[in-house]
Image 1 (cartoon, rainbow, N blue to C red):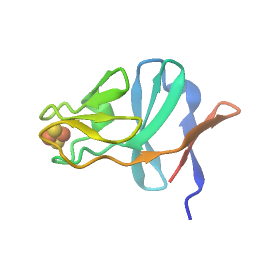
Image 2 (image 1 turned 30 degrees about the vertical axis):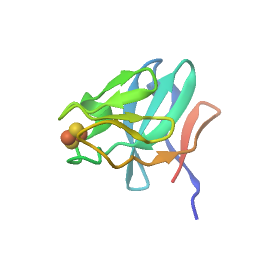
Image 3 (image 1 turned 60 degrees about the vertical axis):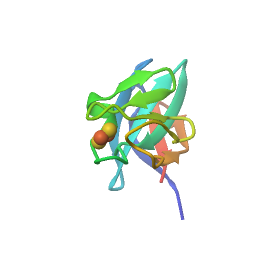
Image 4 (image 1 turned 90 degrees about the vertical axis):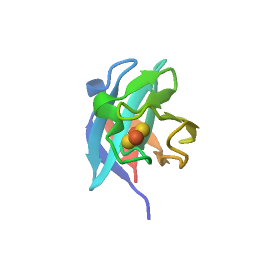
Length: 103
Ligand code: FES
């Protein structure tokens, strides 16, 4: 059963930034756009590059640095090739300054 896992402090993720975290062994990225937190898989479905480390946020899409695929961080949908498979997205919340992701 999915449970919320504490991954770090909410203030580690600034506005317009994405940061990678380990949620009980699942590599997740958390981004903050217009004050809203989004959590999604940190692994590109094309050739498994990490998305948060070198990827670029463009609104609510993240662009993989390796070959330019982009994904919606809201739905996980692959919005630009070469990736065609979506990334997972996860519920995320902030509790007393702590970042929690449901995995
Ligand atoms: S690994 Fe992300 S676009 Fe190729």
